[in-house]
Image (cartoon, rainbow over all chains, first blue to last red; front, side, top):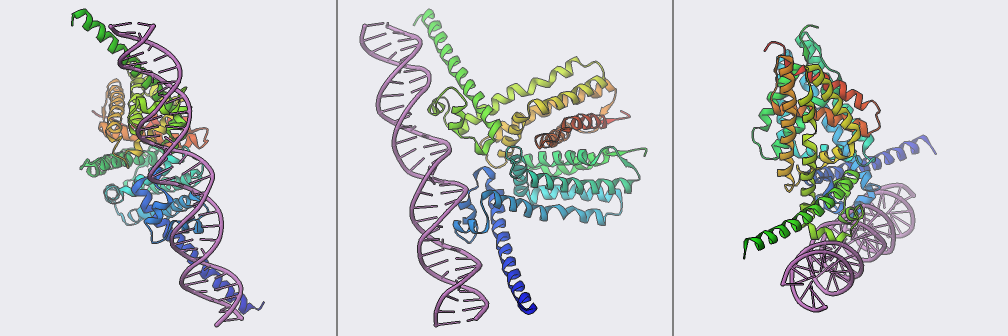
Length: 212
Length: 212
DNA sequence: AGAAAGTCTTGACGACTGTCCAGACATCGC
DNA sequence: GCGATGTCTGGACAGTCGTCAAGACTTTCT
């Protein structure tokens, strides 16, 4: 083969791969929509296909099986989710601004993306029973932990104090607050977001050690 | 009817009701065992029956349908779970003893009852999608919140300080710590229980306001 | 004793599941 | 244009699911 032919076939191959990956992403998006609506336990491949513009057979053309599809969904979810809060860290000029910005963003996320986050908790829970998603779930969890830790470190630095707990503990605290808020929000408790914002602010303050 | 006859039929009726309730509890126990093993998504009535000494048909004799069975399971779980930590509150003589006792008990529970607690989180999550269990789940959650709050109040009293957060926030924090620990424990991380004990101790300390 | 009520088993039903496949349709290089 | 390749459809498959009902067995009442 000539180099030209090589490049040509490469280009074609890449375009096909890209198209393949693009359709995978498209189907994964439909799957995520369905999953966040129905939950893991009651989401079927036919239901996912019905929420897309394709028939149910195509799912096995782009994904090996159901586990492969959901794993891809989880990874796709991660890519969108993790980097969302770094903007706050970058733009905050004072501890108080960071504190309120973080609390407000969490509260807004609670309302805006409630279905997506209940799905995340659903899949994370599923990984306690099934080993299939465990690796991906743990990886996402660590990403979120790092994200929270960046905020905590920046907050302590702006406040001129040090932190009383480590990354894992800090993440667990805010995750607990968010999950409890999500539970109440989805149960129809209207002040769930406001209470979350307040408690997040309090707890973030409480993480500081007065004398560093 | 005579009073004697009344009493007799009452006694009979009560005995039948008791036997009925007893068998319901027995089947619910089998269901809980199965659910904690497989998770909500993959637990079928036939599997539950196979984990008992009866056939699958009997479940519809004692329970209206699957939702009725699982609701009964959730309630039964609550009765056993909630009162477990009150002993610590009653027997602790110092803040330090209460602190270490609480942290140690949480860590021991993490190891001993891991399957049961992943089921609890599974069902609580399920209530974010399905309204069926929502009322019972919220009731149990409030019970747990009150339990945590009793410990926190007693701890503050023994320490001669006041608390920096309210009941809902306090519960969310420890629930987050426990859930994160459970995730790591079930993923095979051996030091999950130890880390939970340490972080619970730290956070409990952090709840106190130095100057009341 | 026999009748009645309670308890449990077994088998069946329709619906739904994940998976696979034969073939239709579209797109491509030649 | 034609064959080859990639893409997609729709149906079929073997299971499993929740539910129900007919009947057998057991216990209780009279």
